[in-house]
Image 1 (cartoon, rainbow, N blue to C red):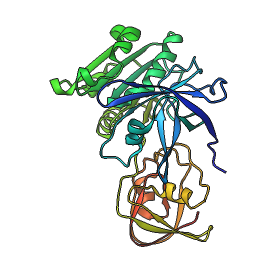
Image 2: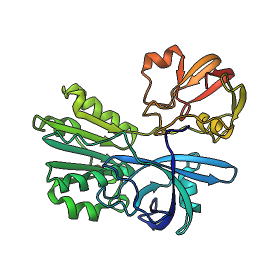
Image 3: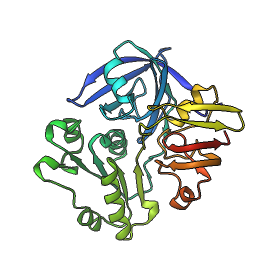
Amino acid sequence: MSINAGIDVIVSDVVEVNSLIKRFHFKRADGQQLPAFSGGAHVVIEMEDGEQRRRTPYSLMSSPFDTTDYQVSIRRDDEGRGGSLYMHREVTTGMAMKISYPANLFPLDLRARRHLLIAGGIGITPFLAQTDQLNRLSADLELHYGVRSPELGAYLPELNASLGHRLHTYYSDEKQFIDYDELLTRQPVGTHLYVCGPSPMIDATLNSARSLGWPEAHIHFEHFAKSPPGEPFVIELANSGLSVEVGREQSMLEAIEAAGVDAPYLCRGGACGQCETKVLEYDGELLHEDHWLEDDEKARGQKIMPCVSRFRGKRLVLER
C-alpha cells in the first residue's frame, strides 16, 4: 500500500503567469476543505498521459491559512520527460485529477531567530507559502530571489507588496548575481538558511555556508531530482517474480507501478528515501540521480532510488 493515498480534485483555474510558467488551482471534488499544510510542503500530481501514468511532485505556493484550494506553479520544461508539458498543454479548468496528501520535506524551523530565504527561478514557489506563514507570525525574514529577467520573475508584484525592503532581486541578464559569501557572513547568530532553485545555485549556496562554518542544523534546502530520459532497459523484480521494461521516458518507479507492484514513495524526486530499493544483482552501470544516497553508498551498488535513477547494462535485479 502506497504511503500516499490520493485526493480527488477539480482544476478550478489555470493562469498563465508568464511565457514559461502556469499556475494551477485545485479544489476538492467533494467540496470539502483540503488537508492542512505548512510552508514548504508539496503534493504529487497524477497525470493520465495516454497510456502513461505520471506522478510528479510540485511545491504548494498557496497560503497555508487557506485550504479552500491548493495552488502550484509549473515551469514548462521542453527537455523533460513530459510531466510539465502535459500540465501546460492538456490540463484545463474543470478537469478532474488526483493529487496526494501534502508532505513537507522543506519545513520552516520556527525556533530560528531569523530566516534567510534564497530562491532561483521556479524555486520561488515554496517560499510564497513560507513567507505568508512567516509574515503571519511576525518573524524576521529576508528573501533573495535570482531570476533571468524581470519579465520571468514570477510573482514579483506580490512579493514586493508582502515583503517590501526585505525582498532583494537579482537579474542574470543584467549581470546581477548573489554574493553568497558576503550575504551569509553578515547574518546574525541564530539565522536559518533555506534555499531552493537550480542545482548550481543550491550547490554554491551550500558550499559557501559550510565553508563559513554554518551549523548543518541551520541549513535547509529542497531539490527534487528528475529521472532523465534514456535508453530502455529491463529490471527483474525478485520478490514479485516479474520482468519489467523501463521505457525511454519512464522512471523505474513508474514502470514498477505500471506492472502492478505497489511501491512506496513520498517525493518521487530522489530526496526523501521512501522508495529506496535493494539491488540484488547487476551487470552494467547504475546511473544514480538522487540526492539521498551518500557517495559511498552509490559506489557500493547495493541500493538504488527507482524514482529518479536509471541503469545501463545487461541485467539488473531488484528486491522489490
